[in-house]
Length: 126
Image (cartoon, rainbow, N blue to C red):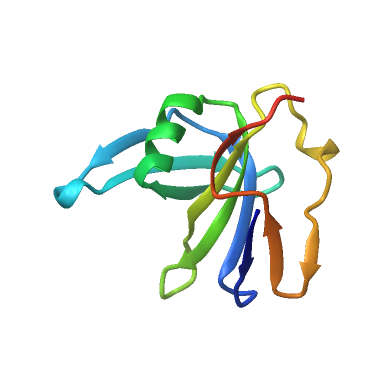
């Protein structure tokens, strides 16, 4: 069990449906980054989620368009605040047959602490 204690503005959570298959890109020094584009129900436009290292590889192999994902990590935005993205440390894949309306809410332990079973990629069967 990994417990993360971060300032509220630094810990973010995004849940939505994958728009297209993620692609893992390799950079110098062996850095691997995958970009996931998701649609959040009720929101206009899409959000970008970035994963690195082995998580990027796992996401690229396992995530498909229309899968419902829950992503936890560090959120950031552009200086003017009109674009937001998430650097994910945990990605949960619920697959295609999930209606976001019926998922259980997050368990918030304390105002700035969220209990996360473990970092990495998780495929969840319902």
